[in-house]
Length: 358
Image (cartoon, rainbow, N blue to C red; front, side, top):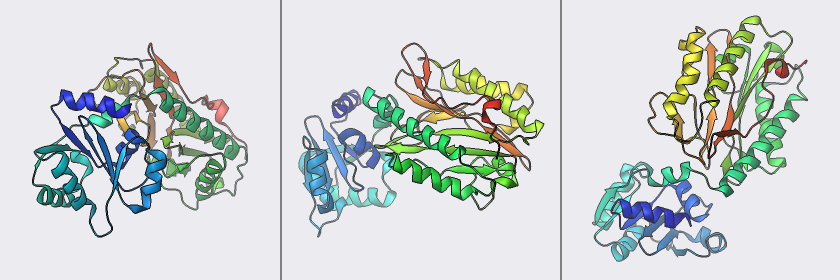
């Protein structure tokens, strides 16, 4: 049970109790999918505190975890403080990054016990996926790829960036996804030089290539892919940076295995791109973990010191962006296995495979 794993971490850090306020962490630990709750985990028990909207949902989703429903006349912070006085009268640890300063001040005044900051204990547990999580990510990727193939197969010159973005969500939901894991990036021509471009009314006919970065959630778990859609009119300059980007991605994936340093994986791609003369045009980290959040640990970047572990799932997404001309990003989702890695996504990405006649 995930709560038992958390208790082991708490014991190692001398924490008799932990107040969990990050709703994603609560979902991870309990299965509760509501939007308002706090979770108190102690050495011996666990209690979810919520309100009347979720009383039946808690019974269905968390039958083995004690729950408490606050009355409508009492604020969540005040009710939680009362529970803490009863169960952790001397002090409790809390998630420092998942509570506002205002909430902290209110809780401190109402509780008056010792509040201590926890580390990223749950996030570190979440970084290593269990088999059930990996299967959900696989399914999310499968739906994501089916959607992409359908959309690319039906493009016309009059299709706009916004229409493609809307179609991604529509088709994803039809196939069983919960929705998009982030707002799709659909960038025609020179718009692709903006790494986080927001789709507009630009028609595909306005550019000879398109960058599409999209993801879906399936039962809470995210996928995240990027592909270029090229046309027969794609300029040679774009073909050049495409080939460099793809080779850089492959160089990084070859280095992924348990124990590998995350920033060295980043360096494998970054150094390749720099050697090709485009070092200044790769201006973001190589990748990030995915799971219940679209961005979670670990990070593949020059500043992340951690090592990879079997069970982690990361994106590998090098990019080259030339302002006023366009950019290329190629992204796959990769599982770290016991002896190496498995690329979970398999959409074609050799340059000639990405050419679509409109």
